[in-house]
Length: 259
Image (cartoon, rainbow, N blue to C red):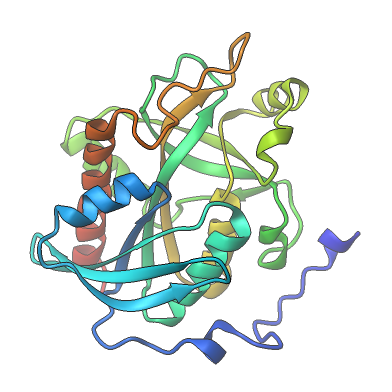
């Protein structure tokens, strides 16, 4: 099978460093999300934000910004949805000089007891996508958030914020999340579903960098009929602003505890 052809050679025909170089002044820690509404609101709340780089694909451009958060420099950019596009940007932002990314976005829940917009910390991910198999040997699962899990949990306890942790199901095929598949994923211990987590964890481990990933719960698949809840970019925007602030606080903590 093609997905068994993992090649550990870190040198490819062309690499991110072929196209991208370290950017002067690039912060060591970056924050990114997938909702353009949440990203624009987060950026607008940082008065000194300035563009320092640009990520590009055939259909769109994604500016990279530098801003100061509680005296700490932080990079910010909007992530593409889907494992392949998101990982392409991640490779490029690492090549520009970022060492750790705090990445947050929506997920579908496989447990109706998880509240709308609840914070979820994935601890492992089922690899039901293709990108991660180019960065890690074949396996059903990959560990997630190993490096900064304790920092995350400590901050949540300090701020007295509730969260849920557990296994996520990463899949590329959003319109093929059938009921039978969903029930099998639940039986395997998954509490939520996303599109990028497993792949981002794999590339970070492969490149010797770090990604701290967390979700905020959106649509509910654990119901008689699909429940959209707060999946829309424009739903519960103030609550999502608070989640964005959590991501920025995490970035500051990571910067302060790493050299």
